[in-house]
Length: 320
Image 1 (cartoon, rainbow, N blue to C red):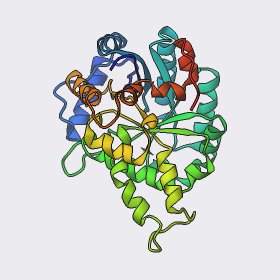
Image 2 (cartoon, rainbow, N blue to C red):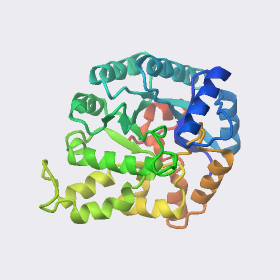
Image 3 (spheres, rainbow, N blue to C red):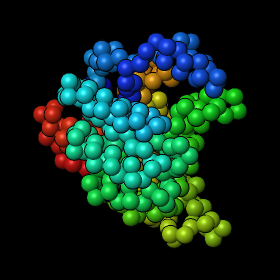
């Protein structure tokens, strides 16, 4: 697989060795036993992309404080300005503060030419299904925006295991199910949501949701029916980051359609090494659960979600 459009790639604004050391020590205290501090660089990212056949990466980074979040979005926009055919920007939104999130949607669209937006499933204690975010989803829907939803990979360890190993999958499933029952996908059908890591545990649970999710003993304020649950889950986009094996893809394809699977690497973070990135890409390329043309299309499916980025590449696409 080559000419890949990668929707799940991370970046880090410039840091000092002291800052990287401090973050490394904090991660190790949370049972993330990285052997050394992590250092992301533009040159390193481009070098890997060239060798891995990645044409463009959509970059995301979601700091936990307002000033750091805006500065990160500014830096991400500068990367796209310097490398418009290699990078796209998914501007981070502070979803613990709806007015600030609305302001950042406007600023990132007007001043930074963001291709889309990135949100965290649980951001400073506020879940994406929280009722306070109704105006944020309404604005994203009005703009027909593409939004990338990522779990909190820096959450505390669970049962002695670091969050990126297991908890990210379950946080993702809990959050998307909460959004489903909150009626967010019903009220805002024009927003396209990409869910990281092939939806985490959600695809494996989707059949259970359809079977049991509308029983009388399940709180269902918005009176979802099985058909609507099926349609809303099928409408999600799922990336292949660390989930390019049959174990994840088979469940994903039981929940949605091949054109809603988009390539993601999860590069640019300490939990991904070149060895794991390449093992995942290799597994995806050899997945036998799809015809070859549909499998190869996964690498470019994302361009339908980002027509302005497609235009920077000189590609004509039919928007999703």
